[in-house]
Structures are given as structure tokens and as C-alpha cells.
Length: 208
Image 1: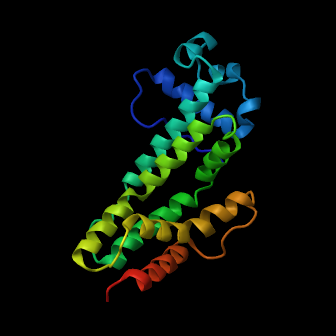
Image 2: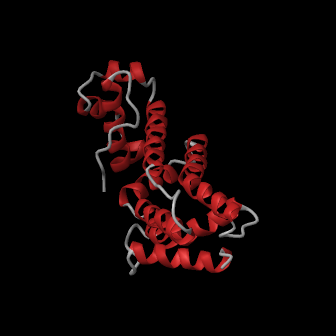
């Protein structure tokens, strides 16, 4: 599944944004090796010379596409608000939003592309995964820190606890479909998966 998403932020030249958007579509549907520059330029309504003016090589364009996807995903997670309410309310808000994000077929498609091209673009892949882990978990880390300080939760290390909650959500909605090519999907709803993860988490860390 593809999604028409404009590059995050406002590019200095709209043509650059069009190029990245069209390149994303081509790389996701064809893979890096089979993607050619000329069709991307045509789809973006620019000449190949103009495209190369922005991105000197296909490798540079691919790196820009992955960086743009990171920007887009980070912007989505910034909309998650879990800064009010009791522990169950705050964690449930995050869990439902995170399950919806990680369960999006488009998100899995981007991850598949990065994984497939990791041998060729190791630094790009590492940066993508490290930034994602940090940015996706940031609202949760902030909530856990506040709930620990208020005494509603007792957590020795917030990053470990955050990883546990996120992992309970990621496994059924993201990793299983990822490795099976979307042939195996969770039978439970995203809300049910998120709710079960939160209850298991609270059973471990809630103080009352």
C-alpha cells in the first residue's frame, strides 16, 4: 500500500518536495536496484538535470527519501498526547495511537524498504531505526517519567519500561505482519491489543 504524503516541513523549492515524493513511490514499489531516475523526474515534472541538481546520485535521492520518511513519522508521533489523566488513561492514549501507527501497512512498507536495502545503505538504515526508536517513544518516556515522579508507577529505568510496553504492541501489529508479508494479521482489534498491553504493564509497574 502506498500513501501520498508530502515531505515533512516546507521545502525551499516545491520541486524538491515533488521529487522526493515521487521517488518514495518508485523506491517502495520497485526497490532500489530497479528504480530509474528518468521516470521519477517525469512524474515530478522536472528534467533529469534539475533532479540531479538537487540529488547528485540515486543513492543521495534514496537517502533523502528515507530521511523524509523519518521526518514524516516523527511528526505523526508528535501528535500523540498523553500528558494528562491517571496512569491508565495516559498509557492507553499512547498505546492506541502507537498500535495504529505501527499497524499501518504504509509504515511497514517503508520499514521493509529500509531493511531490504540495509546492506547497501547501512548508515542510512541505522540512523532511520535509531531515530525512530527515540522519536516514537518520546511521548511515552515523558509520561512514564512524570508518572514515576508522581508515585503512580514505580520504574527503575524508564527506557526499559517504555521498550516493554512498545514491544507488547509491536509484536502482533508490526513484526508478525512484517515478516509474513502481511499474510498473517492479528485477530484482535488494535484497541484490544493496546488495552491488554497497558493492563499487563500496569500489573508490573503500578503502585496501587
